[in-house]
Image (tube, rainbow, N blue to C red):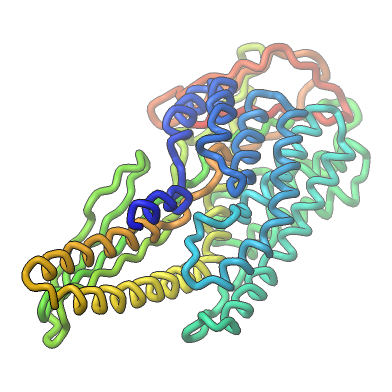
Length: 458
């Protein structure tokens, strides 16, 4: 029976093997090779319940590979699945007090659901379909408007469920205006001569800096003009750097001896190695020995970027320097906090329910075996240890999150004479040049959308 139980736990733990090689390849710019690894991992590492994750990972790698139509296909599939799964997945979790989150369909992080539309818009811009790009940007604002209400409703449902003990309080949503999306919207409206709409977007960008200081906590860049001059080309360089946050596991183990509680904490590194981070012993007179308890939570960890800014060159001459417009990693953290009360509440109740049932079962089993003398006593101890191990195996945090969104975005607007220029973007930090992206000759026209998207996932 124990072998069958442990074997069934393969779906109880997040698979991360596919990222060991693919992430370093993406960091080095080998996006097509990284995509091949993800494609090959579809059957083994990405089960049907992980399809949103598969679509997101491939969708972003296709974007970086400049396979814009394939990227949109994957990102659209992810978006459709997220819409279908979110309510169903949470409802399923609420109706089962012992179901591990890894066994549920992954319905995406909120920042993934928001920024997939941003990258779909960039795909459409690259495909010369500005109208479809605007549709994607509008979807960003629709999702932001619904964000706070979504988790308030879910927490209300949780508080009303039979598994709730006490009351969870929803966090206030402090992210309601995405400057990067407004930036793209401004550029699109400006290229179409819609000056009033461009002005509204620019005002919304200014407002975001005032009302969302916890997110936009870095120097404000110079925003684009609302109206393009008739005789000059406005070139907008948009850079992406670094990699989005990942989820790592923090684990708390409680084990009792006669009159004492042993507390151990482990933490997972970015290389997915688990190390001991703390140990303590508490005297608790009267407590019995032999009780074992494990709780594991996901921790969002930023991977950041090696790059501080980028220098833009036309025909080998420096013409501008970018400034950050969006901390995508910061927004990932902010939106993760919205669902944290639900994660914590479910985890504690699920772990408590399983461990209480386990301890009751251990007591009954050891009582029965104790009648069989010393041999039975030993069997009882071994069976109790096996029960602890079996339950620990099932209690794993859901660490699923897409790996290939960027950490940060930067912008700069350059006014120049219309014409063709050889464009180079040099990515810099305090030690000098980190990397160079040569975009080759690009033609810029007056009154048109002249967008240069440049990126390095370092």
